[in-house]
Image (cartoon, rainbow, N blue to C red; front, side, top):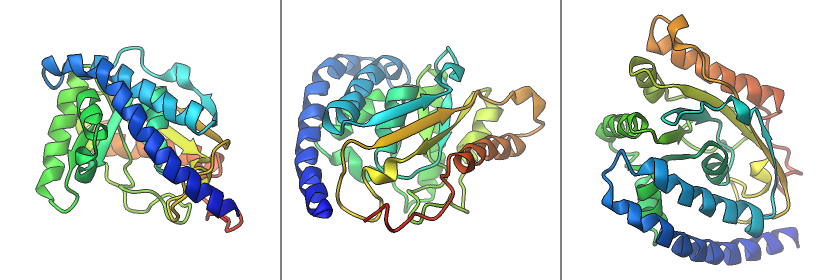
Length: 253
């Protein structure tokens, strides 16, 4: 019965989400006249409104935000986080004023793609290795312009609850080389809302996000060490929050 309700809610919720995306298009569209790298710091407000509509009125989530006062006051920072659910994206958008790196298929979803691109989303083809270099260059363009970007170094959502063993930190290294702050973050509980291994959504859950202040770049001699230490902060929070353990079958039932 729970799964049936979750499936029906997912279908209805998807339709409502499209309506939200359509409505948010209006306040974002005027920023299209500004060039890429300048408009994102303004258009992200529309993306935050979109995220709030999904997380609060639609999903009725209770969200615990920890350490948000540690976010840099000036924009132009990269947020790195673990990845447990599709819901991680709107949480990061809302609480860190950042947009992220997404697979190219999202670009063609009505209103989602347009709103995402205008507010700082970066679309790429995972099958093209050359596209990764373009993503780094485009992210740095947005960051230098004062926009915030988030990325999931694991590359995809965890399927078993553990932190991934294959981590991509090239963008984090580039941030050290270009004087950009990197904010470690951890999200928990979102797998109970929209699981990675099933097609359903459960409203009314408790989730959370915790952020740490960026590490001092001056204390590192190279980008590789800085990237590794920044990711180690994410893992440290995840383990403290119980986000590096196998999913309990009962929790996903």
